[in-house]
Image 1 (cartoon, rainbow, N blue to C red):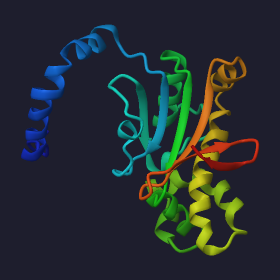
Image 2: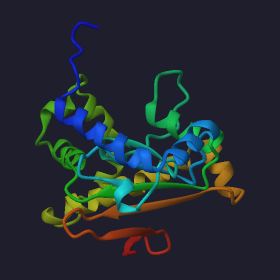
Image 3: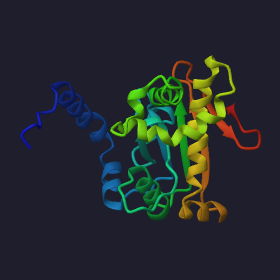
Image 4: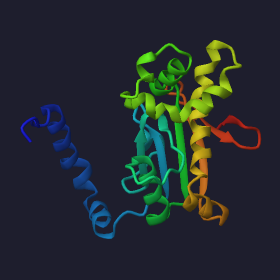
Length: 215
């Protein structure tokens, strides 16, 4: 492919540093992962935002988490229409092939995707309403969440919508038959988290109170 360019030099240097230190010091562990395959205990669905670092947040080693990232950490509803569904494919693989014990949806503060959804749904981002907007059509998943926060004060709506991104995704996960079956059989548990980037705090969704509580 003619448009492909060499890797930036700073990334080459970082890779070489990793290979000389972390990889070399843990060569046996990486060989085991390569030979035995992955057996992650949990799937984490998080945002593409570069500030969200799931591995660092939980001190995870390679092979511990099956991580899927997308705009605003959203899970669409189950739609077996024969089209291409990246997030749904990741959920299917994690729960039916890898048989993870936990699926964790993690939202975060200052989410640009959620802000875009709020702007679109409130009529302030007409460009996202266009059929040609991939971001806009993806954020349609969160429209039900927007409807739930419109009664709040304007300054509280975006934060509440960040929480709704987690809640809507948890609801949509249960529309997948293979997820629901494992949850009802006690083989899989679903979890909702929200992370404040600037404060380093983590909150988890409590279905009993329909609210987020500090971890």
